[in-house]
Image 1 (cartoon, rainbow, N blue to C red):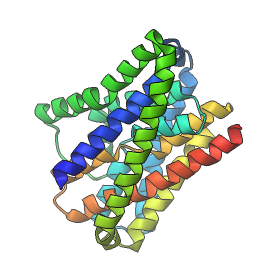
Image 2: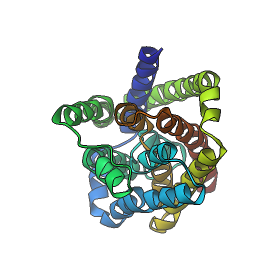
Image 3: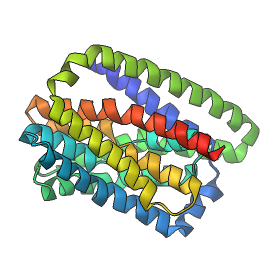
Image 4: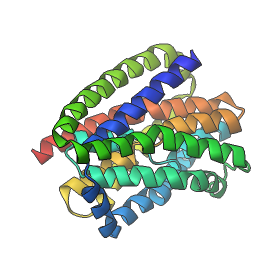
Length: 278
């Protein structure tokens, strides 16, 4: 079962990043570097504001240590690739969203364990083998398909548009199948986390969404990009780290709960933002 789940997640991430890349141009991606305010806002929200919200929520709801560790782990790990995909669906600045996702995933190898230590959920030191495996996963499943999409867009724009629709449709379909399967198979495990942990997760996800909107420059496409990227954190990375570093199953269950709340909230937000853009 775990092998099937890993394969589905892998295919989904590849299709998702390929879809984003096919809709981007190299000039648009490079232009993001000339907007340091937007990048800086995303970094502040991802690594300062959202972890602070999660820390406050964990104390407000009195979470036990294991559930608190799961919530903080999700909060300090921004960069879920679906954030860029939802920016595309919400008619946002896709180049900005994709740049932030890639930057987050590079920084996460250092800032996730550092953030956990600062927040009081220190997982211990990362070994070189784990760092290398994390970097290899990021390169293979995110950077490579995004790069392929970028170059296809540059070499054959017409074909890129057709491929983008196909990959986008396939990613959407796979996401629906995966979400339904997760809910059906993990419903009891989600409930086992407890109401307080679920409420803390809801507060953190909604707070991340609001922070992305409030901290973004007053430009609707950029606000949409920062909102969707801020709401979607790297749950696949969190599942790996929770199962490796935290022996109490409540930590992993809280990560699953975060995923169950985060994705529907992000999808609804993207739909609302797309309507606003129209």
